[in-house]
Length: 475
Ligand code: G6P
Image (cartoon, rainbow, N blue to C red; front, top):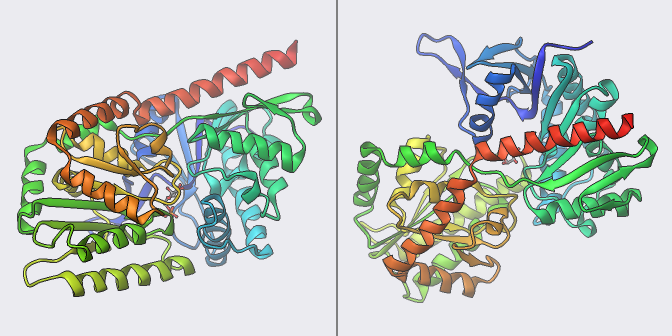
């Protein structure tokens, strides 16, 4: 039976966070992510519903409306949080898709929970979607949903977008359930990726794992009457205009100046902003900075590194280990190089609101993005959007999706510590003229390719592909 909504987004998380109101009652507030910003206007225009997990274990709340969007919460038991979310999503798929930086765990009980929870999301989406509606499934936690949805509702137009990398087949092949994942994704009409290389890896995986031929991003399914699935890249972005405007506010500029003052007005402020995740290369960055201090190339009097590390997936083993390693390293650097009045690394294990983030971006002369693998890395784009003053230098890992677009950043291989050190020194010494030229080019790119454009181009490609496929099957 069809539901009422013409556009249904299915994502692991709802676009709202549970908050306590001043009067003690519980309410919902829009979460800060870019996906929500991009989709909100479309959802409001098109009668949209969003299916997602409310973020804690237990029975789900009843569906509710928040800021013009119907929210449909999915419940996960405590065991499902462990097996589906912390286990298969973040202990198996996350490391596997990020070049096995840490070893993935392959546990059958995790897989079974993943299948069960994906069914639950698919059933809820099928219930909400109107006849012929568009359903857009997001990310690696829900790769089986497209197929499960198509079985229930062949009338739907189904899109899937993978926010993280899709690995080369030689790595993907480790997954005992690789064929089931491919089959799950191929339930969609359009499968979107961050980079052309990810779409290529997926097409290759279809051929190698499931013997399905694919040419120029089209996979043909003979078993389904020749239905074609399109695989293509749609690099995600940020809400450029809103961040640009925010960073120009007088109070934000004043706060940026205050941050520099509080640091003792050093000549150079370096900044790292990441979820505390082993994919982000935080230890590599700290090592490079530590060696620059050891070598006397920079001193604590003239340079300070701020590292914001947002708490993330705190019960997953590798994240617990990473936090210990980072904190020991920061302690050692500060113990060795700090003086009374000068701290080398300002380590902040918190999350901050968008105002404070904009002020931090404005206060930083050099932004360090040293991920070992990253689907896109939106922090790099946020830094660029905040620098209306056309100052600041972005140091960017070649292993991010953003590197495909932001050619005017200083590129680094974070595994090459000497190279990273040289690039940091180059960034610190760059003339304002060169920095300005680079920043202007970066701002043009991100300004022209914002998240609104990303969402519109994906939805348009989905509509076009669905129409072509439908007329082909009638002919
Ligand atoms: C990445 C993933 C998202 C995820 C986010 C935060 O960006 O692509 O799907 O929501 O990390 O991780 P969390 O596990 O807290 O949802």
